Every structure is written in C-alpha cells, then in structure tokens.
Amino acid sequence: MYAVIKTGGKQYRVQPGDVLVVEKLDGEPGAAVAFGDVLMLGDGDAVFVGAPTLAGASVSATLIETRKGEKVKIFKKKRRQGYRRTRGHRQFESVLRVTGIAGEGKSASWDGTVDLTTKAELNARSRNLKLAEFEPVAAAVEAKPAPKAKAPKVVDVEAEVAAPDVVEAAAAQVDAPATDAPEAKAAPKKAAAPKADKAEGEAKPAPKKAAAKKTDKDA
Image (tube, rainbow, N blue to C red):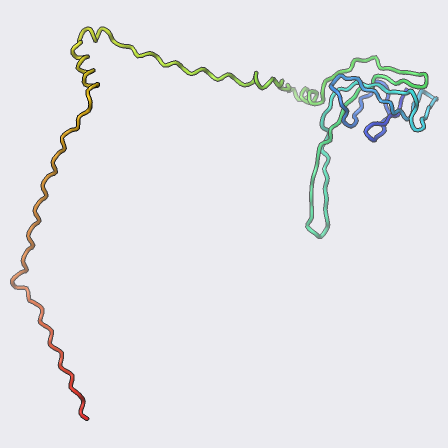
C-alpha cells in the first residue's frame, strides 16, 4: 500500500518503512508526526484519488532528526560586464520514518524499530571516528587552583638566646632613624695655566698704508 502526501509545498510518494526527507518540521527526535493532506491512496489495483485530498486518510511517521541539507549554490553572471556573484546556503530539513498509512477502510503499518541514529554519527562510524559528547559548559570549565598560602617566617629562637646582644643591636640598627651623611667637600679647581707669550722673533704684520685723498677733477 502506498500514498501520495503533500508537505512543504511538495508531493511525496511513500510506503510503510520508507525514510522520507522533507522540509523542516517542528518536533524533537522520536516525536510522532501525522500528515493529513493525502492526495492519493493505492493498494494493488485499487486506486483512490482525492479532490484534492481524501477525507479521513492519514500517514503517520516518526521524526528521526532535523539537520542542514547539502549546500545550494547560486551563481549569477552578466556576460561582457565583468559581473559574477556566487552565493549559497544550506536549507534545514527533517528526516522521517514512515510507520503507517490509513484511509478508505484500509491500513498498513511497519513493524520495524525506528533507529534515531543521525547521519553525522553514521558518517563518523564509517571513518572509525567517535563524536565528542558535548558536556555542559560549567562542567567543562576546569576549576582554577587556589592560591598558595605563604609559609610563616621561621624565627631561630636558639640563636636569639645564644647571642641576645647581637640580636638587640641589629634590631636597634633597623629601628633607628636614618641620619643624613656628611656631605663630601668638592675638590678645589686647578688654577688655569698662564698663557705663553709670543715668541720674540715673531714678525708683526705691517701697518696698512693710508688711502690717498681723492682730488676734484680739473674743470
């Protein structure tokens, strides 16, 4: 027995036990889903066609998972214009297992057990991998180590008893206020050496001649 149903603006031909991938449906994995828009029923030679649907007919299924489908690419181009754009998206889809068909006084059911194993887990098994279990964030975050306590200072009591005068002198030296040290006097500057006189045999430059007085030109 088979049926033709309508969901998500599309039509699907289903039989009990089929795995059906449709547009995203609300619900958690393992939830029961019923389709009331049955367009046609077929059982051997008997075929029942609705106008547009069959009254009282329904198809039941179990939701396995809701996932993202394959990426759909959208490519646009305008020739001789240098225009090219590539976009894409992944549409959400729901995976169902058809468990029964009923209508027109007839019914058919699937006796198998619905396996809720997801496609991602099946792909991981095929590659001998294991999916990581996602734990709560609070449990995943490791607790910070507590700050280490400072060890107390150990006082050598025997040393204080053995040399009390030395300990008291050291304590008095620590407690005593710091005194200003005497300022060191600056060293006296050296006297400048006298300039050496010019050598006696050095010739002095000759004095410049006086310029002749200008006379008026003869008339």
